[in-house]
Length: 296
Image (cartoon, rainbow, N blue to C red; front, side, top):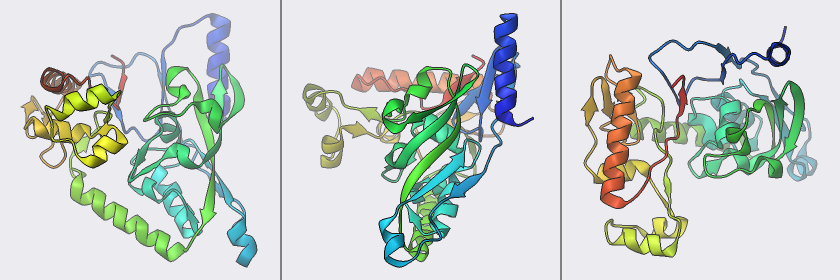
């Protein structure tokens, strides 16, 4: 039985028996924080990893004028999709080489880095909704910063189709290496973590921008983008290195809470609470978690 059929059978069984058995769908296991207590339900890992690239057989002017469609199943690693498309000479997803999770999670949370976001090249997404397979176009997904409509319902991502332009494979592969090196030097990849803990903060109005300028050294770039790095805010409060139990704010990047060896989920939650309280009290900013809580 493939995973789509398994998911459909679970939904049918729940409906027939009027059961309320909790379930949790996950891909790469990044950007989640799991409760220390056992999860009394069904945990399903999305392991469908096929990546299909079309139009790569075209040549010359025909190749350059015809974008390629790339369909990646939900369990495909984002980094694998980035590398396979770069090798095929398709540009648009090189930024995803450093994402630790899967395409399903990237679509659900509109993952992004290095100036790119999942929504940028999405054409359509195949979903499982109440036991039925449906397809939604990009506009129907209502993408926002680290957000989509899928985060607010029970839809399950099965696959995503991207439209990519053609480029030079050598240059694209060099981009992958450059972005990986940048990530290695700026983030604590040698320590266990759930990835970036908080979303960057979006400034909501001109009045708020002026208020924050009185408290923080706001750069012209932040004034333009209206988005403040959560890691930078944590750094301003000198919270790097702060530790509760086995959970510690990374010395390398303030938006990573790392496991020093024996951290519990409760340690991490307490550290999250401390950070959010300090940021709110000092700057009037309410940070939102980027991670998803499981079993809390």
